[in-house]
Amino acid sequence: MFDDRVRKERFVVSRRRTGLGDCLWSLAAAWQYAKRTGRTLVIDWRGSCYLGQPFTNAFPVFFEQIDEIASVRVICDDQVNNLSLPGSFFPTWWNRPSIDCVYRPDEQIFRERDELRQLFESKDDTDANTVVCDACLMWACDQDAERQIFRSIKPRSEIQARIDAIYQEYFDGCSVVGVHVRHGNGEDIMGHRPYWADPEVALRQVCTAIQKAKALPHAKPVKVFLCTDSPKVLDQVSAKFPDLFTISKRFQADQAGPLHSAELGADGGSSALIEMYLLGRCDTVIRFPPTSAFTRYARLVAPRIIEFDLNDPAHLILIEEPPKRHPI
Image (cartoon, rainbow, N blue to C red; front, side, top):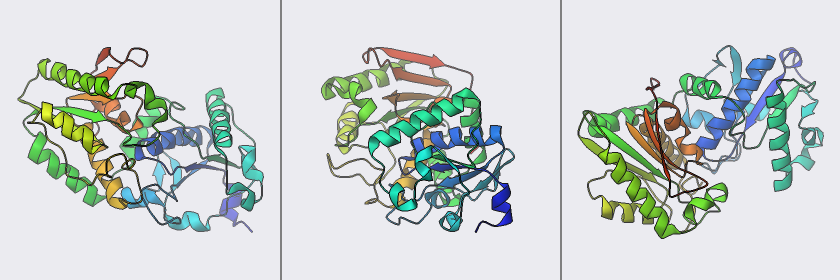
């Protein structure tokens, strides 16, 4: 039986188990829909790729507890394990018996992604009491929603303290060029694949972008900050720019897969957040490839971005905007 409060509420559930960039962008889309339709937002990141505990909600592992986001009620802790959500459900797959919902083939997940995006873009609502967002919803909301999420959620205090300490040690008094190179390290990189059609060319493009970024006008002495998921990329780019700096972290072995892995545990997620937020404090950010959600925060707040054209990855795009930095 549902308690009285659950009976009166309608819900949007943001379920993601992927890298934090995807989780946060998809959360923004779910929040925007919850805001528009007067629903409660449930952040359910159980089964996270960063954790080995299937019933632990990853959100409170990495972020401070929150009860609302811009007047939207939020449930984001381990009470999701005991929460009974009212039917009916959208997409319709979730009206099946629970045992039938355990395995969802990829084609079903992609179908739900398209159904959810269509619902969100239509500006309509559904009669379903609970909308389950268990698919990648990048590009399914506007930038105001993304900014609202980053204004409202805060990394846990120990993660934030590490971000601040690194900033004071390496960033303060410098113009920092942040470089993110999403390699995959043996993972199926899906939409990023065109950028890595020729790995040697790709790394030359990254190095060219760094050289061009360093040559741009800067108000202070320039430093280069590299974030990558590949030890091979780190070695090769460091050989070209021996003065660059990185944040110490554990890597998977060469070609063993991405950093968002339960093998690295919660430390892998914490390292990802530290780099994600530090990239947002850089003066110039190089995104390779720009299809990676990991640098979405930096794209929203950094004053100068260098990206690579998907249709012509050798072509660099310089984007300069007034600073929109958020306090973190």
